[in-house]
Amino acid sequence: MRIFASDRVSNMMRKLGMKPGEAIEHPWVTKAIANAQRKVESRNFDIRKQLLEYDDVANDQRRAIYSQRNELLDVSDVSDTINSIREDVYKSIIDSYIPPQSLEEMWDVPGLEERLRNDFDLDLPISEWLDKEPDLHEETLRERIMK
Image 1 (cartoon, rainbow, N blue to C red):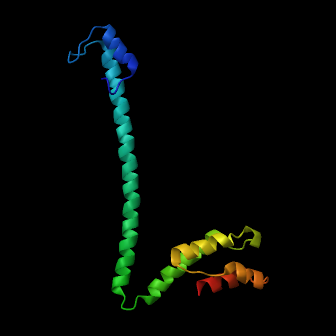
Image 2 (image 1 turned 90 degrees about the vertical axis):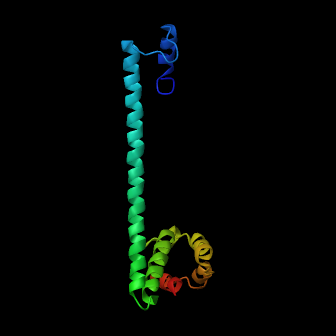
Image 3 (image 1 turned 60 degrees about the vertical axis):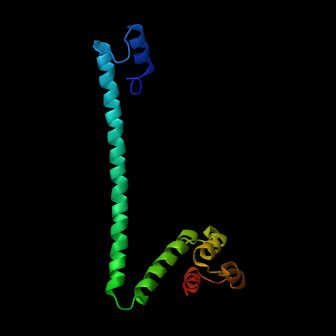
């Protein structure tokens, strides 16, 4: 009772002169216990529900990884598959720093250079390319980064 109920119930039990281990038979206390138990069970249900949702996400990720793994194991030459995955990753990263069909003012070129350097050990002088070639378009820049 001490753990699940409010301080009000603890005070009420003291006022009623109840001793530890004594059976609780007062209707108010019984109702308070039922409410406390309902709250605890509800909280535990929510925790289990959230845990199952996390487990579903982890299971989906596991399926995706094993699907890619099996695809790689089934092919004799994995270079095309690896190149395709690499291109998808690069495109995703480039899109996050240079949004498609965006103005150059919206580009985060220093951030892209740093990300490529940190994640892939690619030291591409993208800022220099843009300074030297003011007419460098987004698609041409993307192609150059992908090489």
